Image 1 (tube, rainbow, N blue to C red):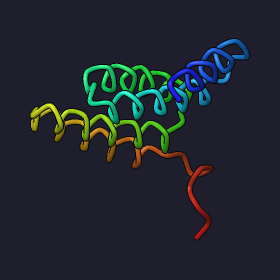
Image 2: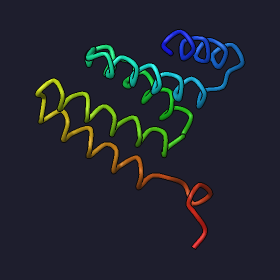
Image 3: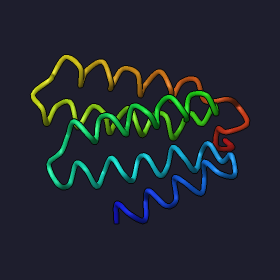
Image 4: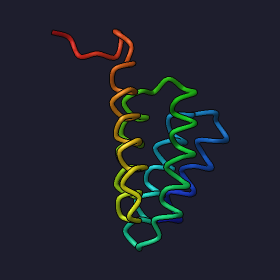
Length: 103
């Protein structure tokens, strides 16, 4: 699965699809986390956060922050996990009206 995620990331990078890059990094992070490599998972999540923030993909950014909170907690880094949860909430609040569901 990691190979496929890396291939998706490479393709997304080649065509300039930043949301695709961030989603592939999220998948890669999940694969690393599933194998117990929370440091690699956190690294990929952080890269994904930077890309999704730059692309203004706030829902994806929030999801990556939530993932990062899980990885930090798994490493026993509760303060960092809390900061990541707060950042996830901030990203959710910053969603533009165009991306909000209709009321």
